Amino acid sequence: MNEPDDAVYQPQVGDTEAILLELREKIEQAGTLPLSSSPRVNRDEVLAELDDALNTLPLEIREARWILKERDEVIARAHKEADEIIEAARERAARMVERTEVVREARRAADHIVTEAEDRARVLRLEAEDYVDQKLAAFEVVLDRTMQAVQKGREKLQVHVGTPALAEPVFDAESEADQAAFFDQDDF
Image 1 (cartoon, helix red, strand yellow):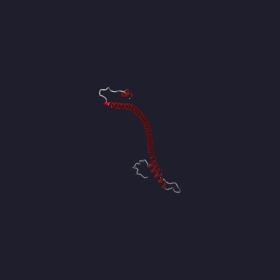
Image 2: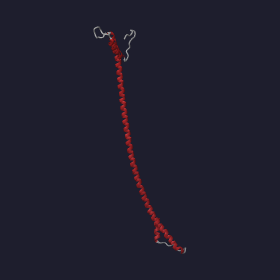
Image 3: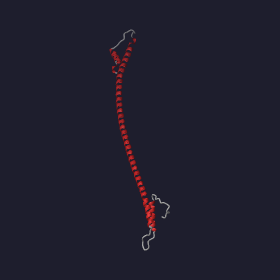
Image 4: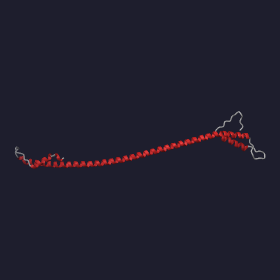
């Protein structure tokens, strides 16, 4: 890594790996000392590259820590949002169950009210029919008596057709009783 002296090297995030790889390559390609297997490297060059790597390392560590912190915050927010969504879903489900239960109870109450109303209407209808039947039976009796009185009156008229016009009318006690019953309205 021979750079001109007037250029100032500014390490960048991610450079540590590049510097270390370059250093490794230099050591692999370095020649060995005569009669030795130890590589011959320029100490100042290796130390300068190690210093560069060390100088960029804190930047990368800070970036990594920031990214990890950011990731943890994102995960925490996601967990919080998930918990809120789950809680909202539980509350909604509870409201739906409650509404369903309220609807069921309302239907039960409505069915009960309708059944009671139908039963009461049936009883009232039967009572009204009985009342009307009683009144019609009483009216039938009065009407039958009236018909009998009318028929007896007609029969008497038939018998008296030949009698003089100034003759006194003939009343019998039975027809007077029938007429009194006809006008008796207390039976209704």
